[in-house]
Image (cartoon, rainbow, N blue to C red; front, side):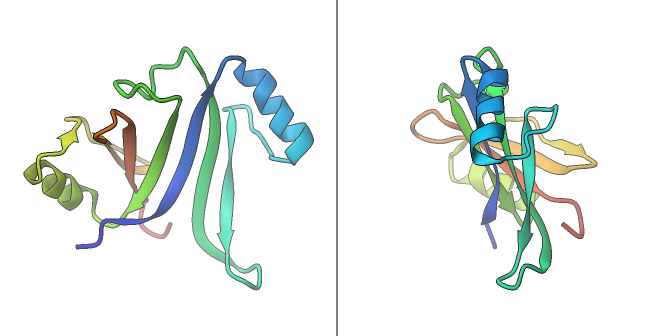
Length: 128
């Protein structure tokens, strides 16, 4: 069974999220959108789009999106078959959170690693 197939996103917290978002936009040219981040489109060596994206976003340090993890970051990993992977992780004794979200953006589940970091697993919708 395929497990992780790539990185779907990197999210982190900031004491002053709007100021840090503005810094990244001004100094590094990242097209930070109103929702606090951007989606980088994937391309091959020739610059042709390959149908994937990696999300990058900054959240307020007051956000509970990373709970119960204690880290100021969360990595989102692309997976091939979320339900099968969640079942395998549970069978292996991993700390998998009970909730699975299914939305227009795909399927999401979360696991807590041995260091207490919340890890997001994402199965993109068909065609992404």
